[in-house]
Length: 312
Image 1 (cartoon, rainbow, N blue to C red):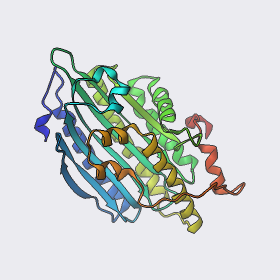
Image 2 (image 1 turned 30 degrees about the vertical axis):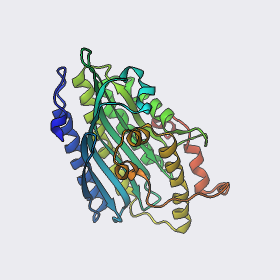
Image 3 (image 1 turned 180 degrees about the horizontal axis):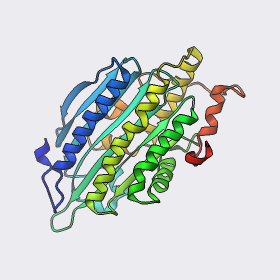
Image 4 (image 1 turned 135 degrees about the vertical axis):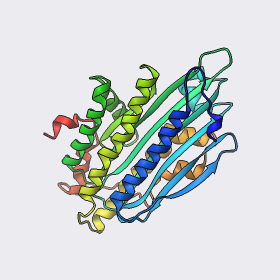
């Protein structure tokens, strides 16, 4: 499937594909080591319209209840409406996309759910310059927030951004806060992180280097949190609250997430796209946390904040 993405207009895509594959390997290895017993099972697939991928899923590990790390490289002759509505200049172009996406749903409610994604897109039309960009980021969704974890998460994000400019962290953190926002709930999905799209303002190599830093940054940011919280005690009350809050995760992914919409509209593999869903979730009518409870504390974290300074 790699042969479908040849170099074009001085943009060599093969190294991007190779990096994304190696990143999938590296993330899976780091998560397996952090889990202790869980192993990812690989499912290779091909897409009729062009391309394919390899989906890796871990279920019922010691730490990870369910998690998936996807690699895909796909192409097509016509973009779905969700893409052309966002970028009308892409209409009438052939397109190619590749990337890695992951979601980890831990068993222990003291460990946040985590998401990360890095991707590359290029669209071509004869006689015109190709349109290309990178996108990605990572975000954290705690149930029982821990200030140490949140500050570590954002400090890691800040530090990886710093070599690329003083404003990159602030800009991409703000973008993350705005993107992962549930309008109908008037709350953020979690405590944010980084999000960026349409990244081509720098030269190609710099953009690619930033994506590499974000991919490594996810490992550096998340694995220490898993290791710190995996042995903390919890009971049925914490478990039920975790399942209730997972419902919010489902709501965002199915209602607002552009990646989910693009994947389904472009004929992507449904099992791989919906791998991001938690294995268990629940909804409760008009749930109200008890005043002063640990569950009520979460509401204080579901609005954008300067996490690097507010927790000091």
